[in-house]
Image (cartoon, rainbow, N blue to C red; front, side):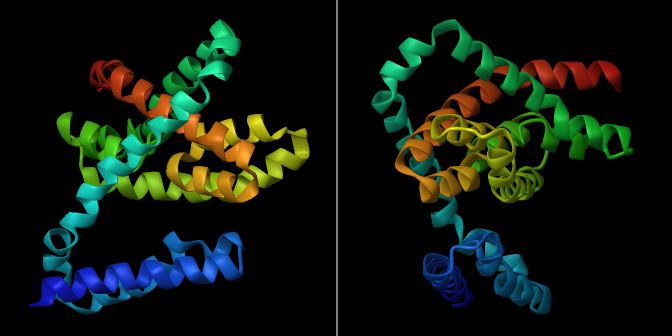
Length: 227
């Protein structure tokens, strides 16, 4: 009986948090933060809820996959931009994906993290469903990968406007930067900023996810060699 209640509580917390963020669009009221706080408290106080939560929210986890695939519409909508960008745009996406494979995981290795944690962080700069699947397929933990995605996404959404003002980024560049570095959460922030930045962020998120998934074996091979 507790599993339907946990699912309802999760959905209700998200709807309430999203409504609050719509009325007060400040990053500290981001739905991921606001919805996560009461749910975290509930799971911390109830061992039964904590053990049942993964199974209770499995339908929501399943929906993440189609949601990410839905971003592919941005690839079609922005196909002309891709063609115009040509080699330069492809190089930006490629080097962004390569550097992201080693950023979080490299810091974790330098700080003495376990091999499982390092493996979990290699795909952490792609969107959560891709990161979890890639990490679990290579000896990492999907839950750690998802948590890292959330932290990175929130950091990108917070710092993105500061960099946009500092470097006077246009809407397309701002959206692409958020989509590459802050994936789903950053894309949401870009959509709130403008339609053009949201479209660029959606495109960047999709391309970044595809490249990270394709290039992840290279990252794992490097970290295995360094171990």
